[in-house]
Length: 167
Image 1 (cartoon, rainbow, N blue to C red):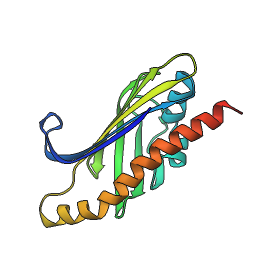
Image 2 (cartoon, one colour):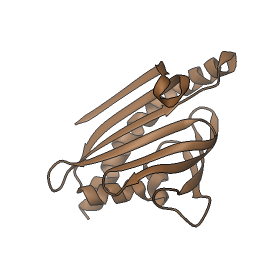
Image 3 (cartoon, rainbow, N blue to C red):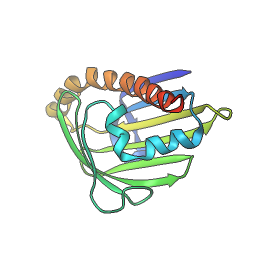
């Protein structure tokens, strides 16, 4: 099962932002829960499945779990640089990251076993663009790339995990 939704400029009072863009991805992969979680949680694999990522590097020696911080550079039609911190982490259940510098974004990745060899992955990503003409322009440039990124993530995460478990 795969489902993706993209909602632009929806009020997001829960995040403290006036307006944000939300992206939800739900994908079921043919890989066990522990394998799926470990793959997504390993920062070194992120460029393999996340669209547009040019750099995803730890800032300190802590590169796994809650409190780990990463500098990220990606391109979604425009160059994006941000620093993110892992603010929520429960093994085989959830990874939550929030930006602490640069481009404002929040993501939550939820994992649920769907039998012994299948995992349901639910990703919820929100990002904020600047207000005014600059933000609207940036949003218009980014929109087709965000749609492409969502499809890329869904396809590559599933394919990469399923290839790893059939080796």
